Image (cartoon, rainbow, N blue to C red; front, side, top):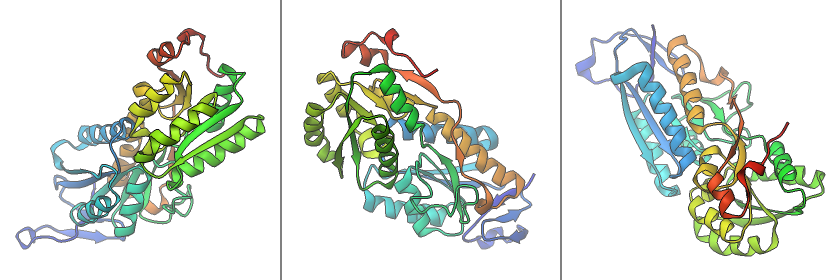
Length: 321
């Protein structure tokens, strides 16, 4: 087995280690039990991102156990803090794991050599993280959480055929959210639905913008937006109070406080990304040539408690054929 490492400095006390080869992505060491320093950077705290982190950590620990030295950092939505945490992790880690688009973009801006694996990134190409999905061309690759948005629109139509005005609450400054909204609005307009957009730039905007939006719409369409998802307790409660169903977003967010979606598990995203990191370590791969992977095993998720609170019999909700 080969252990692939990228080490910024080697202490003189370890000078007996034999470094066999160096590439732009990693150094190959003959010491199979050499610690693997993995830095984890999460943009903000919410259920989906927490699951992606847990899946990655559990799978890596299963494979390497005590050999991994973890440095796990969460910026709690603070962009300035994200920058300083990224710089620290880039200096001190061999492999980097970025959770959500802002974390991946920030790590990419401070580290161009060490491998960066990402998950919960809906639009890697649009975010400037990769040159293409098939050949990233840089030191970043991972999994994209872009959900089946057109299917979400079909799910909405099938369950709420009388709905005409569809609200979308999203952070217009997040490229991942904007990309999903562009797909959703095009799909809605093709089905003669009217998208009603509510744009925010921070969690401070949610209450005011969503209050106005809920007065106009029949259904609230959810994309995977870090700002919205981090406030899903508020967003879901406001939708329930207005008796407005929500359709879309991730399994974790819907289970926390939404009605329904088609999604896979974000724990699975973390595991899938860990499998990529393991292949990188074991097979002497180059990150730039590892294609970005999409999620698998999408299923319909229904939050029965949410349904009952807005007067919907859970068993009446149906999936796509």
